[in-house]
Image (cartoon, rainbow, N blue to C red; front, side):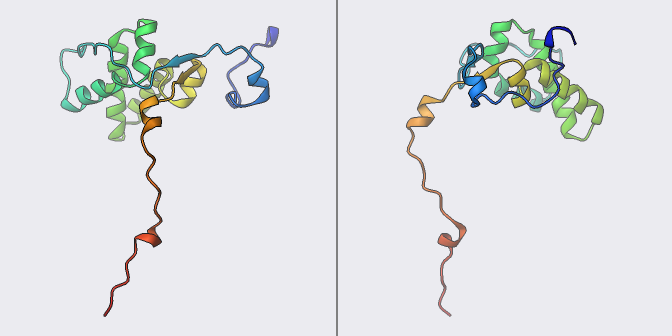
Length: 144
C-alpha cells in the first residue's frame, strides 16, 4: 500500500500504550448515557422485543454518536431487527447484524475503529462499592 495506509488488519491500538499516549487524542467521548429524544420506530411494523431493544439502545452512549453523525434511525432499526433475528440462530441475520454493528460503532472493536470512548459514569463512581463475597463465606454449618 502506498503511503503506509493501514488495511485494518491486526490488533487495535492499545489506548494505554506509550506510543498511543504520545499521539494527539482525536477520539470522540460519549456520555455514559444519552438523555435526548428517542426517535420514533421508523418501520411500519415492529415487535414488542424490537421496540424494547430500540428504546434501550437510544438510552445508551452510542445514541449520542448517532445524533452527532445524523445517522438515519432506520439504520439503527435495521441493526435491532437483524440482531433479534440472529438471536434465534439465523446466520444470515447474524452477518447483517455484525455489519450494522460495525457501521454504528456498537461493539468494542467498532468503537475503536470509530475512535469512540465512553466517559466515566460519575454517578456510578460515587456509589459505594459492595464488598465481594466468596461462595465459601456464604456457606453455613448446620448441626445434625
